[in-house]
Length: 488
Image (cartoon, rainbow, N blue to C red; front, top):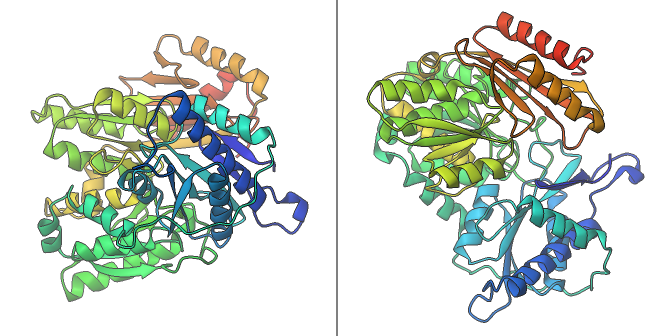
């Protein structure tokens, strides 16, 4: 597997039996740090941007998730950035949204998180951030990677001290900003027993702090950071069997002993995504994370919500329900897949909330970054707003069956396949801003077909009111593009 470089950052292998398979090294991190530092210094001169920070060198804020490989990679990245003329503030193990908040709070010119998100422990990566805490644009990424590819020799320098103020606590700042968005007293009064699985990642400290401040009785699983993950880290049903079992037992005990309402939360390693388990121990699906949060926010104020083309249409149903109850102005806008694209749509439409169906929720009141703490707080706020338990809230949202498949397709064949999809379903509502999405509005079903940026495959996602209808729709789509059965 080669080093993967995209608008989402850089990702590669750090651990393998065959040393030649290792692609993410300290040298790579140092060179990326130098490339990003050089780019930021170039922007300062070219665009007349003031990154001086009261006459000092521009400051880059960095952190990492809990992977053991992250410490040395972050140190190497910071060395490279300092060789390019920047100062650095190393915040240690901290969430991705926490780093974004740190960049803004410390007046940084940019940021970095050493993380491979939900990838297994054999991987690690480098996620870059702008001064606003957002991912660089595609054009910026091209410029940064061109500097990296030029193979300029990075001067070796002494690491120096991290420029973090002694009284700066990023976890405290993060939690305080999230608490300001919800009814803290109502949540405390509702009495929750929360089982939190932090998968030995960056969300353990701030996640536990948030739940403690909200008065929850907390059972914290996999809270130790800086070690191997206790299980495969992607927060999907297959990887959360232990969490589901623990929530079921804790839920029964809580109801019998103290009347507490149980709920389970699972973070990914850099804590920008959240999966949820209801009081019975049932994994409810990552698509519901954003839907439940949207239900809570729109119940309090009308507004626009942004998401990507591959996220469930449950959001449109929720917005329509609010409209029917007199909540004028509620609607959903959709963007191309990717957090940066969702944020762009949020800014363009002054959205009250945004996110993606992978469990990522973005609240502009906190930061324009997916945030598991925001998701936890909003879900608890929703539960505290009524006498209903989580399973009842889920049942109140119209349900759908969603299927995701991949088919082999070379890059030079993708365009023709997308044209075939548009031709086959030309009588339906089409959106070709990112591959092709086809909507059967009256039948409440859709399909999204798009080529992968990193593999010779096409991704097919369909959603329909029933699994039977979804499977039939998937067959129609595969027939339209002339594909073989899905590869996975």
